[in-house]
Length: 74
Image (tube, rainbow, N blue to C red; front, side):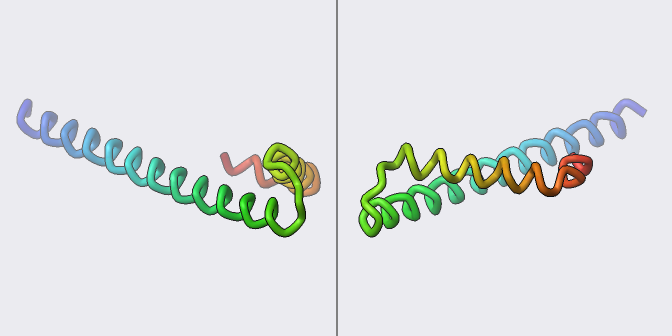
């Protein structure tokens, strides 16, 4: 009984570590893509990065305001 419980605990711990790793890699890659996009927009449009990031944040807030049901899944 103890052995099976310990096995389940180890598999759950491994799953949580794996999910944390995947989320970290996803976050890092998305941040890199957005940073490259901001550099490109800075070069082409002459905007500062702060302005670009505020615009991205505004876009996300507008999308959430238009589709509020999107937040019910989380």
